[in-house]
Image (cartoon, rainbow, N blue to C red; front, side):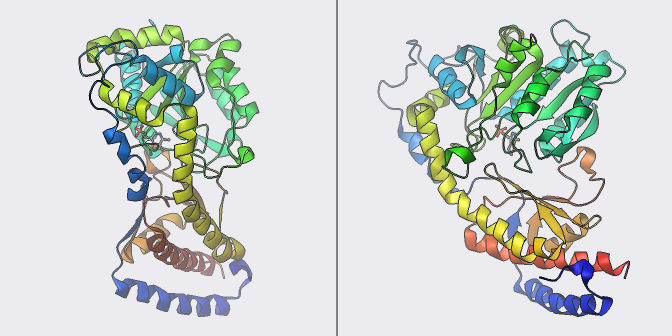
Amino acid sequence: MKQYAAMSREELLEERENLTSLYKGFEEAGLSLNMARGKPSPSQLSLATDMLKVLDGDEIKSVSGDDVRNYGIVDGIKEAKVLMAEMMECDPENIIVCGNASLNIMYDMIARSYAFGVMGSTPWCRLEKVKFLCPVPGYDRHFLVTQDFGIEMINIPMTPDGPDMDMVEQYVNNDPAVKGIWCVPKYSNPQGVVYSDETVKRFAALKPAAEDFRIFWDNAYCVHHLYEEPEKQRKIPDILKECAAAGKPDMVYEFGSTSKVTFAGAGISAVATSAANIAEIKKHLTVQTIGFDKVNQLRHVKFLKDRAGIDEHMMKHAALLRPKFEMVEKELNEEIVSRGIGTFLHVDGGYFICFNSLKGCAKDIVARCKAAGVTLTGAGAPFPYGKDPDDSVIRIAPSYPEINELKKALDVFVVCVKLSSIEKLLETK
Ligand code: PMP
Protein backbone atom coordinates (compact mmCIF):
# COMPACT_ATOMS: atom_id res chain seq x y z
CA MET A 1 0.00 0.00 0.00
CA LYS A 2 1.45 3.34 -1.01
CA GLN A 3 2.04 5.76 1.84
CA TYR A 4 0.25 9.06 1.33
CA ALA A 5 3.36 10.98 2.37
CA ALA A 6 5.24 9.33 -0.50
CA MET A 7 2.66 10.39 -3.12
CA SER A 8 3.28 13.26 -5.50
CA ARG A 9 1.02 16.30 -5.51
CA GLU A 10 -0.69 14.98 -8.64
CA GLU A 11 -1.32 11.57 -7.11
CA LEU A 12 -2.77 13.16 -3.99
CA LEU A 13 -5.06 15.39 -6.07
CA GLU A 14 -6.33 12.40 -7.99
CA GLU A 15 -6.93 10.44 -4.77
CA ARG A 16 -8.75 13.46 -3.35
CA GLU A 17 -11.06 13.60 -6.36
CA ASN A 18 -12.03 9.92 -5.98
CA LEU A 19 -12.60 10.30 -2.26
CA THR A 20 -14.64 13.46 -2.68
CA SER A 21 -17.15 11.66 -4.86
CA LEU A 22 -17.42 8.91 -2.24
CA TYR A 23 -17.94 11.55 0.44
CA LYS A 24 -20.68 13.23 -1.60
CA GLY A 25 -22.44 9.85 -1.78
CA PHE A 26 -22.41 9.66 2.02
CA GLU A 27 -23.79 13.18 2.32
CA GLU A 28 -26.61 12.36 -0.06
CA ALA A 29 -27.46 9.14 1.83
CA GLY A 30 -28.64 11.27 4.79
CA LEU A 31 -26.95 9.05 7.39
CA SER A 32 -27.51 9.38 11.12
CA LEU A 33 -24.89 7.26 12.90
CA ASN A 34 -23.17 7.58 16.24
CA MET A 35 -19.77 6.40 17.46
CA ALA A 36 -19.53 8.96 20.26
CA ARG A 37 -20.31 7.66 23.72
CA GLY A 38 -19.29 4.39 25.31
CA LYS A 39 -22.76 3.07 25.96
CA PRO A 40 -23.65 -0.63 26.06
CA SER A 41 -25.85 -1.68 23.13
CA PRO A 42 -29.46 -2.74 23.71
CA SER A 43 -28.43 -6.41 23.28
CA GLN A 44 -25.85 -6.02 26.01
CA LEU A 45 -28.41 -4.49 28.35
CA SER A 46 -30.76 -7.37 27.62
CA LEU A 47 -28.18 -9.78 29.07
CA ALA A 48 -29.15 -8.48 32.52
CA THR A 49 -32.91 -8.11 32.10
CA ASP A 50 -33.48 -11.17 34.31
CA MET A 51 -31.93 -9.24 37.17
CA LEU A 52 -35.26 -7.44 37.41
CA LYS A 53 -36.93 -10.73 38.32
CA VAL A 54 -34.63 -12.10 41.02
CA LEU A 55 -36.33 -10.56 44.03
CA ASP A 56 -39.69 -11.83 45.11
CA GLY A 57 -41.44 -13.17 48.18
CA ASP A 58 -39.16 -13.35 51.19
CA GLU A 59 -35.99 -12.63 49.28
CA ILE A 60 -35.80 -9.12 50.54
CA LYS A 61 -33.48 -9.72 53.43
CA SER A 62 -29.73 -9.32 53.52
CA VAL A 63 -27.56 -12.07 55.04
CA SER A 64 -27.45 -9.84 58.11
CA GLY A 65 -31.21 -10.31 58.43
CA ASP A 66 -31.88 -6.66 57.56
CA ASP A 67 -34.82 -5.84 55.33
CA VAL A 68 -33.28 -4.15 52.28
CA ARG A 69 -36.50 -2.23 51.68
CA ASN A 70 -35.90 -0.12 54.74
CA TYR A 71 -33.52 2.69 55.70
CA GLY A 72 -30.03 2.07 57.00
CA ILE A 73 -26.69 0.30 56.36
CA VAL A 74 -25.05 3.35 54.87
CA ASP A 75 -21.95 1.46 53.68
CA GLY A 76 -23.84 -1.29 51.85
CA ILE A 77 -25.11 -4.78 52.66
CA LYS A 78 -22.47 -7.35 53.48
CA GLU A 79 -22.97 -9.60 50.45
CA ALA A 80 -22.75 -6.61 48.08
CA LYS A 81 -19.43 -5.66 49.69
CA VAL A 82 -18.20 -9.20 49.08
CA LEU A 83 -19.36 -9.10 45.46
CA MET A 84 -17.76 -5.72 44.73
CA ALA A 85 -14.58 -6.77 46.52
CA GLU A 86 -14.38 -9.88 44.34
CA MET A 87 -14.88 -7.76 41.24
CA MET A 88 -12.34 -5.13 42.28
CA GLU A 89 -9.95 -7.76 43.69
CA CYS A 90 -9.64 -6.36 47.18
CA ASP A 91 -10.95 -7.14 50.69
CA PRO A 92 -14.63 -6.56 51.60
CA GLU A 93 -13.62 -4.59 54.71
CA ASN A 94 -12.03 -2.01 52.41
CA ILE A 95 -15.31 -1.42 50.56
CA ILE A 96 -18.22 1.00 50.79
CA VAL A 97 -20.99 0.11 48.37
CA CYS A 98 -22.72 3.24 47.12
CA GLY A 99 -25.40 4.21 44.64
CA ASN A 100 -26.11 3.91 40.95
CA ALA A 101 -22.80 5.08 39.50
CA SER A 102 -19.15 5.60 40.46
CA LEU A 103 -18.67 9.05 38.91
CA ASN A 104 -20.88 10.32 41.72
CA ILE A 105 -18.49 8.93 44.35
CA MET A 106 -15.53 10.52 42.59
CA TYR A 107 -17.31 13.86 42.48
CA ASP A 108 -18.15 13.55 46.19
CA MET A 109 -14.55 12.70 47.09
CA ILE A 110 -13.35 15.87 45.37
CA ALA A 111 -16.21 17.91 46.86
CA ARG A 112 -15.43 16.70 50.41
CA SER A 113 -11.71 17.37 50.01
CA TYR A 114 -12.59 20.81 48.69
CA ALA A 115 -15.06 21.71 51.43
CA PHE A 116 -13.74 19.86 54.51
CA GLY A 117 -10.16 18.88 53.67
CA VAL A 118 -8.65 15.40 53.76
CA MET A 119 -8.16 14.01 57.29
CA GLY A 120 -7.64 17.34 58.96
CA SER A 121 -5.59 18.98 56.17
CA THR A 122 -6.54 22.45 54.95
CA PRO A 123 -9.69 22.26 52.79
CA TRP A 124 -8.71 22.71 49.17
CA CYS A 125 -11.11 25.64 48.85
CA ARG A 126 -8.85 27.64 51.20
CA LEU A 127 -5.70 27.01 49.25
CA GLU A 128 -4.29 29.43 46.72
CA LYS A 129 -3.71 26.67 44.19
CA VAL A 130 -4.76 23.02 43.88
CA LYS A 131 -3.37 20.92 41.05
CA PHE A 132 -4.29 17.52 39.65
CA LEU A 133 -2.30 15.33 37.30
CA CYS A 134 -4.23 14.15 34.28
CA PRO A 135 -2.81 11.32 32.17
CA VAL A 136 -3.69 12.12 28.56
CA PRO A 137 -5.57 11.11 26.59
CA GLY A 138 -7.98 10.32 29.42
CA TYR A 139 -11.63 10.22 30.47
CA ASP A 140 -13.34 13.53 29.72
CA ARG A 141 -15.70 13.33 32.71
CA HIS A 142 -12.79 13.03 35.17
CA PHE A 143 -11.39 16.25 33.79
CA LEU A 144 -14.78 17.95 33.97
CA VAL A 145 -15.02 17.12 37.70
CA THR A 146 -11.69 18.73 38.56
CA GLN A 147 -12.47 21.63 36.23
CA ASP A 148 -15.76 22.15 38.08
CA PHE A 149 -13.81 22.87 41.29
CA GLY A 150 -11.33 25.21 39.60
CA ILE A 151 -8.50 22.72 40.07
CA GLU A 152 -5.55 23.30 37.74
CA MET A 153 -5.01 20.26 35.55
CA ILE A 154 -1.59 19.18 34.31
CA ASN A 155 -1.23 16.88 31.30
CA ILE A 156 0.85 13.74 31.84
CA PRO A 157 1.52 11.81 28.64
CA MET A 158 0.41 8.18 28.54
CA THR A 159 2.86 5.46 27.45
CA PRO A 160 1.95 1.87 26.54
CA ASP A 161 2.69 1.00 30.21
CA GLY A 162 0.59 3.74 31.81
CA PRO A 163 1.28 7.39 32.67
CA ASP A 164 4.84 8.72 32.27
CA MET A 165 5.98 7.84 35.80
CA ASP A 166 9.13 9.99 35.71
CA MET A 167 6.88 13.01 35.28
CA VAL A 168 4.36 11.78 37.88
CA GLU A 169 7.14 11.32 40.47
CA GLN A 170 8.64 14.69 39.63
CA TYR A 171 5.34 16.51 40.26
CA VAL A 172 3.95 14.47 43.16
CA ASN A 173 7.18 14.24 45.14
CA ASN A 174 8.08 17.93 44.79
CA ASP A 175 4.96 20.08 44.48
CA PRO A 176 2.69 20.26 47.57
CA ALA A 177 -0.06 21.85 45.45
CA VAL A 178 -0.45 18.54 43.55
CA LYS A 179 -3.27 16.81 45.44
CA GLY A 180 -4.27 14.00 43.15
CA ILE A 181 -4.07 12.10 39.89
CA TRP A 182 -6.79 10.51 37.76
CA CYS A 183 -5.96 6.92 36.78
CA VAL A 184 -7.82 4.29 34.78
CA PRO A 185 -5.39 1.41 35.35
CA LYS A 186 -6.96 -1.28 33.19
CA TYR A 187 -8.20 -0.88 29.61
CA SER A 188 -7.88 2.87 30.06
CA ASN A 189 -10.39 5.25 28.55
CA PRO A 190 -9.75 5.90 25.69
CA GLN A 191 -6.55 4.00 24.79
CA GLY A 192 -7.22 0.60 26.37
CA VAL A 193 -3.81 0.73 28.04
CA VAL A 194 -3.17 -1.67 30.95
CA TYR A 195 -0.73 -0.30 33.52
CA SER A 196 2.38 -2.46 33.88
CA ASP A 197 3.31 -4.03 37.24
CA GLU A 198 6.21 -1.59 37.45
CA THR A 199 3.87 1.38 36.94
CA VAL A 200 1.57 0.20 39.74
CA LYS A 201 4.54 -0.34 42.05
CA ARG A 202 5.94 3.10 41.24
CA PHE A 203 2.56 4.61 42.14
CA ALA A 204 2.69 2.87 45.52
CA ALA A 205 6.27 4.08 46.02
CA LEU A 206 5.39 7.76 45.52
CA LYS A 207 6.54 10.10 48.28
CA PRO A 208 4.06 12.95 47.97
CA ALA A 209 5.05 16.46 48.98
CA ALA A 210 1.38 16.97 50.00
CA GLU A 211 0.14 14.96 53.01
CA ASP A 212 -3.34 14.98 51.44
CA PHE A 213 -2.27 13.68 48.03
CA ARG A 214 -4.51 10.87 46.80
CA ILE A 215 -4.46 8.55 43.78
CA PHE A 216 -7.94 8.38 42.18
CA TRP A 217 -7.77 4.81 40.85
CA ASP A 218 -10.84 4.41 38.66
CA ASN A 219 -10.96 0.68 37.95
CA ALA A 220 -14.05 1.09 35.77
CA TYR A 221 -13.04 -1.67 33.32
CA CYS A 222 -11.50 -4.23 35.70
CA VAL A 223 -13.55 -7.17 34.37
CA HIS A 224 -14.29 -5.83 30.88
CA HIS A 225 -12.19 -8.21 28.81
CA LEU A 226 -12.79 -8.78 25.10
CA TYR A 227 -11.06 -12.17 25.11
CA GLU A 228 -11.40 -15.34 27.14
CA GLU A 229 -7.74 -16.41 26.98
CA PRO A 230 -6.21 -15.84 30.44
CA GLU A 231 -3.10 -14.17 29.00
CA LYS A 232 -5.31 -11.54 27.33
CA GLN A 233 -7.25 -10.88 30.55
CA ARG A 234 -4.50 -8.72 31.89
CA LYS A 235 -3.81 -8.85 35.63
CA ILE A 236 -2.52 -5.85 37.51
CA PRO A 237 -1.25 -5.72 41.10
CA ASP A 238 -3.70 -4.68 43.82
CA ILE A 239 -2.95 -0.99 44.39
CA LEU A 240 -4.45 -1.02 47.91
CA LYS A 241 -2.12 -3.80 49.00
CA GLU A 242 0.87 -2.20 47.26
CA CYS A 243 0.25 1.14 48.98
CA ALA A 244 -0.24 -0.55 52.36
CA ALA A 245 2.98 -2.52 51.89
CA ALA A 246 4.77 0.73 51.05
CA GLY A 247 3.54 2.23 54.33
CA LYS A 248 1.00 4.56 52.71
CA PRO A 249 -2.35 2.77 53.03
CA ASP A 250 -4.34 6.02 52.84
CA MET A 251 -2.83 7.25 49.55
CA VAL A 252 -5.39 5.65 47.21
CA TYR A 253 -9.13 5.65 46.56
CA GLU A 254 -10.21 2.91 44.16
CA PHE A 255 -13.55 3.13 42.33
CA GLY A 256 -15.66 0.62 40.46
CA SER A 257 -19.19 -0.03 39.31
CA THR A 258 -21.42 -2.45 37.47
CA SER A 259 -22.52 0.20 34.97
CA LYS A 260 -21.11 -1.85 32.11
CA VAL A 261 -21.81 -5.20 33.71
CA THR A 262 -25.55 -4.90 34.28
CA PHE A 263 -27.28 -1.55 33.59
CA ALA A 264 -25.45 1.66 32.75
CA GLY A 265 -26.37 4.26 35.35
CA ALA A 266 -28.56 1.73 37.19
CA GLY A 267 -25.88 -0.54 38.56
CA ILE A 268 -24.13 -0.45 41.90
CA SER A 269 -20.86 1.31 42.64
CA ALA A 270 -18.16 1.11 45.25
CA VAL A 271 -15.13 2.84 46.67
CA ALA A 272 -12.32 0.73 48.08
CA THR A 273 -9.78 2.28 50.41
CA SER A 274 -7.98 2.06 53.79
CA ALA A 275 -9.80 1.71 57.11
CA ALA A 276 -8.89 5.30 58.03
CA ASN A 277 -10.24 6.67 54.74
CA ILE A 278 -13.39 4.54 55.08
CA ALA A 279 -13.99 6.04 58.53
CA GLU A 280 -13.49 9.56 57.19
CA ILE A 281 -15.85 8.98 54.25
CA LYS A 282 -18.52 7.41 56.48
CA LYS A 283 -18.42 10.42 58.80
CA HIS A 284 -19.72 12.60 55.97
CA LEU A 285 -21.76 9.92 54.21
CA THR A 286 -24.00 9.41 57.24
CA VAL A 287 -24.92 13.09 56.98
CA GLN A 288 -25.40 12.92 53.23
CA THR A 289 -27.71 9.88 53.09
CA ILE A 290 -29.49 7.36 55.31
CA GLY A 291 -28.49 4.67 52.88
CA PHE A 292 -28.15 3.88 49.18
CA ASP A 293 -30.42 1.61 47.17
CA LYS A 294 -29.97 -1.72 48.95
CA VAL A 295 -32.73 -3.36 46.91
CA ASN A 296 -30.53 -2.93 43.86
CA GLN A 297 -27.51 -4.17 45.81
CA LEU A 298 -29.34 -7.38 46.71
CA ARG A 299 -30.63 -7.74 43.15
CA HIS A 300 -27.06 -7.59 41.88
CA VAL A 301 -25.86 -10.22 44.35
CA LYS A 302 -28.70 -12.59 43.50
CA PHE A 303 -28.16 -12.13 39.78
CA LEU A 304 -24.35 -12.12 39.50
CA LYS A 305 -23.70 -14.27 42.59
CA ASP A 306 -19.90 -14.10 42.77
CA ARG A 307 -16.76 -13.45 40.76
CA ALA A 308 -17.31 -16.58 38.68
CA GLY A 309 -20.81 -15.31 37.89
CA ILE A 310 -19.43 -11.91 36.90
CA ASP A 311 -16.77 -13.48 34.67
CA GLU A 312 -19.34 -15.69 32.96
CA HIS A 313 -21.62 -12.70 32.40
CA MET A 314 -18.76 -10.57 31.07
CA MET A 315 -17.93 -13.21 28.47
CA LYS A 316 -21.46 -12.74 27.09
CA HIS A 317 -20.69 -9.03 26.73
CA ALA A 318 -17.37 -9.91 25.12
CA ALA A 319 -19.10 -12.10 22.54
CA LEU A 320 -21.21 -9.10 21.48
CA LEU A 321 -18.42 -6.52 21.63
CA ARG A 322 -15.48 -8.44 20.17
CA PRO A 323 -16.65 -8.57 16.52
CA LYS A 324 -17.23 -4.81 16.62
CA PHE A 325 -13.79 -4.02 18.01
CA GLU A 326 -12.10 -6.44 15.63
CA MET A 327 -13.89 -4.92 12.66
CA VAL A 328 -12.80 -1.40 13.64
CA GLU A 329 -9.20 -2.49 14.17
CA LYS A 330 -9.10 -4.39 10.85
CA GLU A 331 -10.51 -1.51 8.83
CA LEU A 332 -8.24 1.04 10.48
CA ASN A 333 -5.20 -1.16 9.82
CA GLU A 334 -6.09 -1.85 6.20
CA GLU A 335 -7.25 1.61 5.20
CA ILE A 336 -5.41 4.05 7.43
CA VAL A 337 -2.36 2.61 9.18
CA SER A 338 -1.19 1.01 5.90
CA ARG A 339 -1.18 4.47 4.29
CA GLY A 340 0.77 6.08 7.12
CA ILE A 341 -1.99 8.52 8.02
CA GLY A 342 -2.90 7.34 11.50
CA THR A 343 -2.19 4.95 14.34
CA PHE A 344 -3.96 3.26 17.22
CA LEU A 345 -3.14 0.78 19.99
CA HIS A 346 -4.69 -2.71 19.85
CA VAL A 347 -7.03 -3.24 22.81
CA ASP A 348 -7.85 -6.40 24.81
CA GLY A 349 -10.72 -4.86 26.74
CA GLY A 350 -12.61 -1.74 27.77
CA TYR A 351 -14.91 0.36 25.63
CA PHE A 352 -12.79 2.40 23.26
CA ILE A 353 -10.25 2.53 20.51
CA CYS A 354 -8.15 5.65 20.47
CA PHE A 355 -7.23 6.89 17.00
CA ASN A 356 -4.29 9.22 16.35
CA SER A 357 -4.51 11.15 13.11
CA LEU A 358 -1.76 13.22 11.51
CA LYS A 359 -1.15 16.30 13.66
CA GLY A 360 -3.70 19.05 13.16
CA CYS A 361 -6.38 16.84 11.57
CA ALA A 362 -8.63 15.58 14.42
CA LYS A 363 -11.05 18.52 14.58
CA ASP A 364 -11.33 18.56 10.81
CA ILE A 365 -12.04 14.80 10.67
CA VAL A 366 -14.75 15.06 13.35
CA ALA A 367 -16.36 18.00 11.49
CA ARG A 368 -16.29 16.15 8.16
CA CYS A 369 -17.88 13.10 9.76
CA LYS A 370 -20.56 15.26 11.40
CA ALA A 371 -21.44 16.87 8.06
CA ALA A 372 -21.88 13.39 6.57
CA GLY A 373 -24.15 12.27 9.44
CA VAL A 374 -21.64 10.45 11.68
CA THR A 375 -21.28 11.72 15.25
CA LEU A 376 -17.96 11.19 17.01
CA THR A 377 -16.78 12.31 20.45
CA GLY A 378 -15.60 15.91 20.07
CA ALA A 379 -11.92 16.18 19.16
CA GLY A 380 -10.08 17.41 22.25
CA ALA A 381 -12.56 15.81 24.70
CA PRO A 382 -9.99 13.33 26.10
CA PHE A 383 -7.86 16.27 27.29
CA PRO A 384 -8.25 18.75 30.18
CA TYR A 385 -10.06 21.89 29.05
CA GLY A 386 -10.89 20.06 25.79
CA LYS A 387 -7.49 21.04 24.35
CA ASP A 388 -5.54 18.44 22.44
CA PRO A 389 -2.13 20.09 21.90
CA ASP A 390 -1.55 18.10 18.68
CA ASP A 391 -5.16 18.06 17.50
CA SER A 392 -4.75 14.38 16.65
CA VAL A 393 -6.74 12.23 19.11
CA ILE A 394 -10.19 10.84 18.27
CA ARG A 395 -11.99 8.45 20.61
CA ILE A 396 -13.91 5.73 18.79
CA ALA A 397 -16.70 4.02 20.74
CA PRO A 398 -17.77 0.86 18.87
CA SER A 399 -20.14 -0.60 21.50
CA TYR A 400 -23.52 0.99 20.85
CA PRO A 401 -24.31 0.72 17.11
CA GLU A 402 -25.28 -2.60 15.61
CA ILE A 403 -22.43 -4.02 13.54
CA ASN A 404 -23.85 -3.09 10.12
CA GLU A 405 -24.38 0.51 11.28
CA LEU A 406 -20.89 0.57 12.77
CA LYS A 407 -19.47 -0.57 9.43
CA LYS A 408 -21.25 2.28 7.63
CA ALA A 409 -20.01 4.81 10.19
CA LEU A 410 -16.49 3.47 9.87
CA ASP A 411 -16.56 3.74 6.07
CA VAL A 412 -17.41 7.41 6.44
CA PHE A 413 -14.72 7.86 9.08
CA VAL A 414 -12.06 6.30 6.84
CA VAL A 415 -12.91 8.56 3.92
CA CYS A 416 -12.85 11.62 6.20
CA VAL A 417 -9.45 10.65 7.64
CA LYS A 418 -8.08 10.22 4.12
CA LEU A 419 -9.47 13.53 2.87
CA SER A 420 -8.23 15.42 5.89
CA SER A 421 -4.79 13.83 5.66
CA ILE A 422 -4.53 14.70 1.97
CA GLU A 423 -5.33 18.35 2.72
CA LYS A 424 -2.65 18.37 5.43
CA LEU A 425 -0.05 16.80 3.16
CA LEU A 426 -0.91 19.12 0.26
CA GLU A 427 0.06 22.08 2.48
CA THR A 428 3.69 21.10 2.06
CA LYS A 429 3.75 19.55 -1.44
N1 PMP B 1 -14.95 5.79 34.71
C1 PMP B 1 -14.57 5.57 33.45
C2 PMP B 1 -13.13 5.47 33.10
C3 PMP B 1 -15.55 5.47 32.46
O1 PMP B 1 -15.19 5.30 31.19
C4 PMP B 1 -16.91 5.57 32.82
C5 PMP B 1 -18.03 5.45 31.82
N2 PMP B 1 -17.80 5.88 30.57
C6 PMP B 1 -17.23 5.81 34.15
C7 PMP B 1 -16.23 5.89 35.08
C8 PMP B 1 -18.64 5.99 34.59
O2 PMP B 1 -18.97 5.00 35.47
P1 PMP B 1 -20.31 5.08 36.31
O3 PMP B 1 -21.43 4.77 35.41
O4 PMP B 1 -20.08 4.06 37.38
O5 PMP B 1 -20.39 6.47 36.87
